[in-house]
Length: 252
Image (cartoon, rainbow, N blue to C red):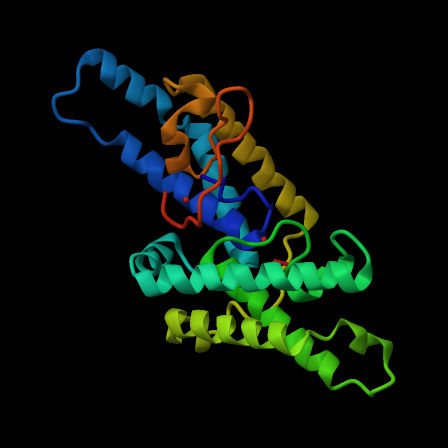
């Protein structure tokens, strides 16, 4: 399973921090019938007070800069087949946008991708995918309104890509419903400030190392996915990614 925040996307980073706290809360719960040794192991996996406090503090800062869906809301959306299909369709549409821009600019990962929500690793969560689709639709409309001779028009989508992106945006917007349409939280570009972005990366790294050192299976432990991290497959490669997350498992 892919790590939730592998791409460094702000929406995905926010969700990853939330997933970690939810899983840590669950880890604290006493398990009926557990032995003293099992209890000792379970409690060793629980985040230390200072690490937990860092995660909570950084999550508060990220939430202030990146408003959007909570993990509970995302989990509800993923519970339906329509929700999963809309998310998959949205991610596929963004992959087309990414390929289109690289082909038109002759660049790998062109900076203009920022305007479409596909700079760097594409988003994977509902919030991140919908935000990127919203940006892509808006940027296409802006370029379509440019004068015929304007060089900016060279990045216009083909009719097919425009239709796929528009349909994916509408489908995902329909699934998200009023939660997004009334607050417009996921239709604008957001970018974490460098200082804010580095802190989540550091604390996520610290949580990951804590888990590596305490989970029975270390880097291959299946429980890593419940914390939103990708397992390292035997031989040193990351385990094969699966489709999105949002449960225990790029903005632009």
